[in-house]
Length: 344
Image (cartoon, rainbow, N blue to C red; front, side, top):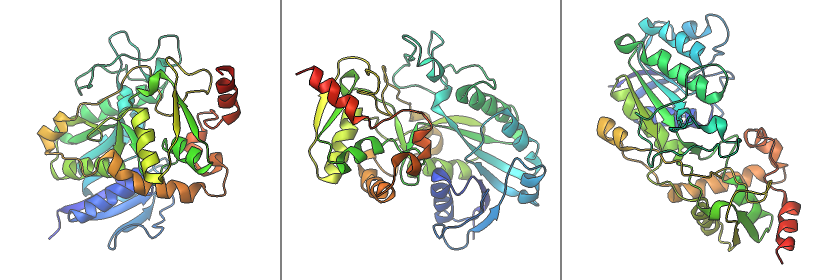
């Protein structure tokens, strides 16, 4: 006997793969929808795959057919996507939609959108509860669009009970922009030193895909209108992340700490933050009985192995376009060497 039928939109991506696996293991009949529709041999037996581009008029409605007990939307992005789902509420029993921790702002109106300004990085409470203030909804930035999406869905209420998951820094295999590459590539390149700004103390709360998928699984089985953070059981510092990756690779690297902000690319990492970003997970524990299925350190061997295979013999920007899109050379060794030489 199955729990019902589930439709996963964005199923071929990093989070979608994990969500499909978790739902199948929990007894759901799963339809995996993506633009390519390809299985690539990684989904469990019995999963139905469909090719679907939600931007095509009527495509999502056609894909849903007579309806599903739950729709899991990994790739919803803005107000328009929210309206698309609420417009199909009669065919969806409930929804689970992935949002982002980037929606929060601090008491001075600073958010991820202002981090490039002088003293623009937000000062959040530690940890950040779901009730904390967010940026205003809009169409201008990633954060404002996600807030617009959230509000559109939550306004539907009982017509479409929706669990919104505000994910932290997602990590695990199949990421187009893996932050862990910053350390893994240096080790593979035989780079003996890494430079970390802010004394290596930056904290940007990660969430492994399997922990996010566990939240999806629990929310699918317990419909409701709610907002929940998505994070790992710990929020390690960037220095702790480096040490954990070294342990997996069996290498010893020298860490040089900068007291303050990065100097250009020197000391800059994908986790670099002037102040901590840590998400409160007590609501997920209370409302869904959530317990993380893996810790950050426990998840690393699989991620590091995948990164090593993916990076071998290829230029990193080609292999990881999601990391390249930031337009930053995260591996400017010449700049690092010049900085080190200037301190001798």
